[in-house]
Amino acid sequence: MGEEVKSTVEEEMLVVESKEWYLVSYAPHGVPTSDHLKLRTVRLSLAPDSIPDAHVAVEMLLFSIDPYLRGRFTGTLDGLYFPQFQLNQVITIFGIGRVKRSKDNKYKEGDLVLSASFPVAEYCVMSSSEIVAKIDTASGISLPDYLSSLGVPGFAAWLGIEVVGDPKPGSNVLISAASGGVGMIAGQLAKLRGCRVIGSTGSDEKVKLIKEEFGYDDGFNYNKEADLDAVLSKLFPNGIDVYLDNVGGKMLESVLNHVNKFARIPLCGMISQYNQVWTEREGIRNLLNMVGKEVRMEGFLLKTHFNRFGDFAKEMEGYIKEGKIKTKTKINHGIGTFLHSLNSLFSSSNIGKLVIQLKP
Ligand code: NAP
Image (cartoon, rainbow, N blue to C red; front, side, top):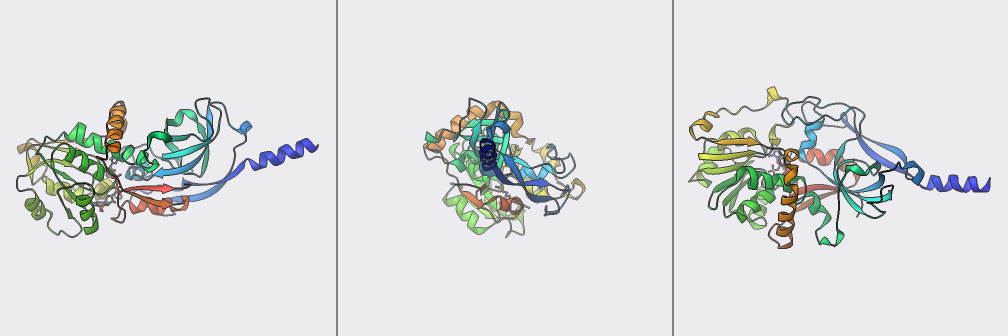
């Protein structure tokens, strides 16, 4: 009897309360609100008997807040064509967690692990097959960098510049959302290739940052420029060879008036259009310029290029260690900030890569 009471108490001590964000209703247009995403608290047992074989119990440390998430709860398959979260399902996300218990001998308590499908929760029990990599804490690379220069935005920037855009030394390169997760890395990669690199971004402070910290040759604040054609004429007297498009809409249309023969436009994303259904999105009226200038415009997604992730990571780790690629991280604290953090991507309020930190 005494033994039974003791083991019940011990089991109880291994039960944690975990807050998690789940989908209540789809949001086809407009900024998502608490009508769409809600926080709830669940009780989760971390007792060894509750963890199936080949599973791990993880406490979450950092989440990567990326614009593609918006495309996972529109309720429609268009544009980004990302699979939709199911109603009542916990949102899943790229992140870093610490193993609390393991039923897989590849992982032990205390290991720091990366996954592309962590629940936006404080704790979880998940299949160890969902772990992408174990972090080498002796590498000298900061944890946020694994979600930034070595994570989703870094890989997207590398694909956009090194694989799809492929600018030559001396090429004139424009990058939109230049101070964000993708833009800060893309600009530095293009500079390493010897290009002349200009960035567009949403505030004067960010224009200063991209020039002083990320080595951009020049930049402009699109929120202040009433005439994008005029600013592009001024900054690109010899035309644009490569435009890494992160925003779509009016910027893409204006760029097409300034492209050089055989210009390349890697389409990384179109964040200015993510909160609209397709019939409300801005049309690009001058696509005909692509014919006359023989422009190659090409969309790309990370998942198609995962076979290149190893090449990317090796190169990027080298750049980080040599101090050739710098990053800036905006850290929001606590799981409660998820909805606000997601929505902040659609304004000019963040600088650098946005992460949510749950635990130090
Ligand atoms: P981010 O820059 O960290 O955050 C988004 C930034 O976009 C905001 O800080 C804001 O910066 C800018 N923005 C928001 N609304 C805008 C609007 N209406 N017009 C112009 N700019 C606006 O995001 P990120 O991670 O680097 O992502 C950038 C783009 O890359 C997104 O379109 C994303 O979907 C795409 N992406 C694609 C892939 C892929 O596999 N293809 C992977 C990762 C990211 P400012 O207004 O201050 O410039």
